[in-house]
Image 1 (cartoon, helix red, strand yellow):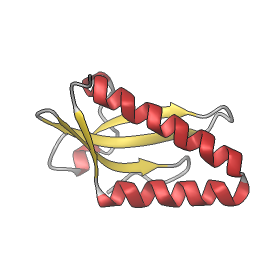
Image 2 (image 1 turned 120 degrees about the vertical axis):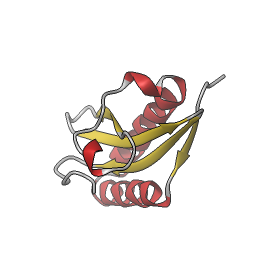
Image 3 (image 1 turned 180 degrees about the horizontal axis):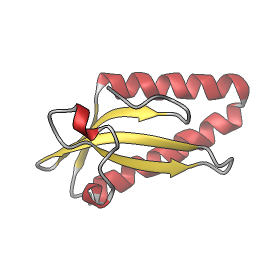
Image 4 (image 1 turned 45 degrees about the vertical axis):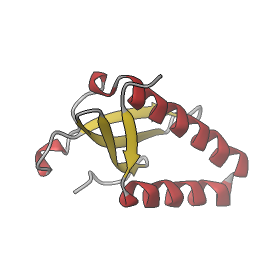
Length: 103
């Protein structure tokens, strides 16, 4: 049983859809592998969100923003930016390689 509940913002959901669609247009199998890796990363947040580091852009927000990175077989690194409030983990953004820091 998970200690924390992971809640995705509308922005994070839009990010996920955009990344998935971009990958699917290039590699349907790659997009499914990415989605599976994302799901595993979100599961890790539900278990131990405090173990991941503070995000480089955390100072731009009113709350502490942390950063979970997950790497694909291709070597590309994706990031989930999130905050913790009580027993809730708020997924704020999902960033692809090469994207600017979140605002």
